[in-house]
Length: 373
Image (cartoon, rainbow, N blue to C red; front, side, top):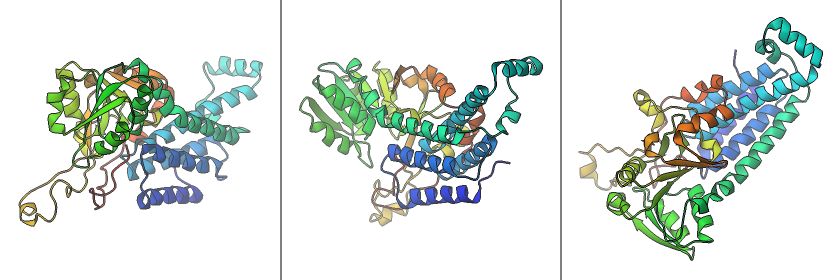
C-alpha cells in the first residue's frame, strides 16, 4: 500500500501550503523547492527498505500532482527520483553479490533478480547515494539554462529576424548569448492580456546588438513573413512532442507553419513530462484565471451580460514544432520519447497522467498569481 508516513505527510502539506501562500517566481523556483522536498523525504528515517521509499515517493507524487497540476516540475522530478532510486538499488545490490552468486541466481531464476524480492531488502548506503544523486540533479538544473544558451550561435545568425512571445527566462538567456557576438532583430509578441512580453522587450532592449519591436498578437501573422525563425519557451513538453505553452502560442505556431518558418523551443529537462494531452480531459490541462484584465469589473453593465473566459495555456501539437533545444542539444519532437525513457520509468507515468482539473487562480491585479513559466 503506497501511503505517506506522518512525517512525510507533514512535509508534503508544508510544501503545498508554502506554494499557495508564496507562489514561486518561475518554474525554476518550483523545481528548486521540489528538490528540497525530495531531499527531506529521502533523509526522513521512517523508511528502511527501498520498496518503502518508493511507496512514499509515489504517494507524495500523486498528491503533489493533484494539488499542483499546472506545475510540471513537481511530478516529473518525483518520477525522476523514483527511477534513480531503482537504478541505485539495483546497482548496489548487484555490487553486493559475488559473481558466482549472481550467475547462480540468473541460471536458477532464468532471468534477472526478482524485482519484488530485491526491493524488499535493505541496501546499505542507499540513502547517502540518493542524496548525492539529488545534488547532481541540482547541479544539472543550475547549468541547464547555460547549456541551452550555448546552442544559440548555431541557430541565430547575423541580421536574423527572430520572433518570440511572452516572457521566458530560458529564451532570454538564449538570446543574450547570441547577442554577445551577433546583431539581430527580435520581434516580441506582448502576450495580452497580461503583457509579460513587455518585460522581455525591456530586457532585450538593454542589449547593444539587439533591435526590439513589440507587437500585439493580432499582428503576428502579418509580421511572420519577415521572420527567419521563432524561438519560444514552454510550460511543459508533453510525451507526444507537443507543448503546453502560453495562450496564443498555437496561433503563432500555425502562422509560422503557413510561412515555412522554423519553430525552436528552449526547454530544460525538468519540463519534459510523460503526460499526454487528452482532449476529453482538457480541464486537467488548462487553467483559467480572472478575466478582469480583459474586461474590467468597472464595466458593470457589460460584465453582467457577457460570459468571459481567460485561459492561460495553449496546446501546440508536435507537427508545429521544428526542434527542441535542451541541455543535451537539439532534439526532434518525434524523439522526445527517447529522453522520457532515459529520465523516467514507465510504471511511474501515471503519477503525472492521472491529474484532474486544475484549480482556478485567486483574484488579483492580473487575474491572480499565474502558474510559473
